[in-house]
Length: 378
Image (cartoon, rainbow, N blue to C red; front, side, top):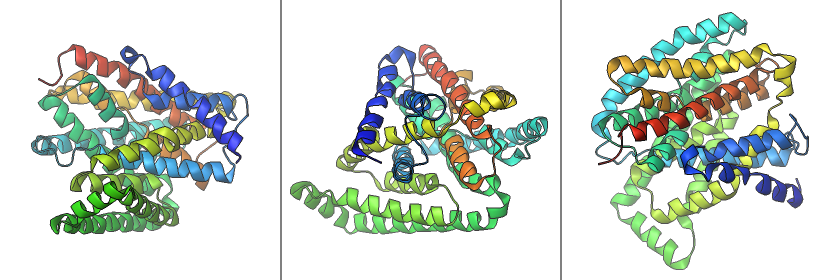
């Protein structure tokens, strides 16, 4: 991959901020980046080759970093969130139960044999999308806190479940990979907590800040890439490695300087590159050749919204239920890993992304409705 290609990717990725600039639209930045990739990729113009090894490697780094940043955004240390965790876990569990028959029905309708995958997709939420929408709109209150807990639990559970359902032949190895990544992340948490207890974390932070060494960033990137290598070896998405380490950093406490550095390298380069790559890797012409998969994508998207909206029966505001249905990381990982393993039918991968985009569009509207209904911070 040449510098000219990187410059081109950076340029077309500006479509994301351009669409998101109008705050009233509540359009996530990633939507424009995905659309840019679709236009310049194999679906239309064919300018970018998503199969180019360097491009793919950079995109994998971007995906891991995107999920790392998403994990750091989960308010693990927020005392107001902890009382809502039990209720949020119950809500996520109920959505998961309802998603099972929905996934079975969709798989039976299309004869794909992917009932488990579809159930995980329908049950999933995306903290990477929901948290920025909540922050930008100033949403708050007890119902919002419970929804955030629900999203965090669902996101984590579906990240763990995805490699187990997408390729049953690799289920045992994937399960061991999930355990290995989780245990390693737990050991990192214990290490970080011990460093904080001994005051070494503060000293390291001051040394790094005074000498401009970026030690915390270097350490976290090194650990992230190590976890990602373990995930790839065990056929687990790098999404799990990134999100797990993000939760660890959030639980210990993320220094503001590290947050700024992570935001800079992720949102400034690797994140946009990943979403442009993802759009370029999708061959929407397969949907034209297999039009039934357009219906599959629509059913997955609207099915996720319907299942999450069922929590209205338990008193959750409808707008928050719809907002919690927004998904991106899980469908992206499913499309990426499924394509690499050859377990998805032609046209099925873009159908999964289409379903995710349906939930993103509806969730953007739901966020605005929630704000107008007064579900904001007091």
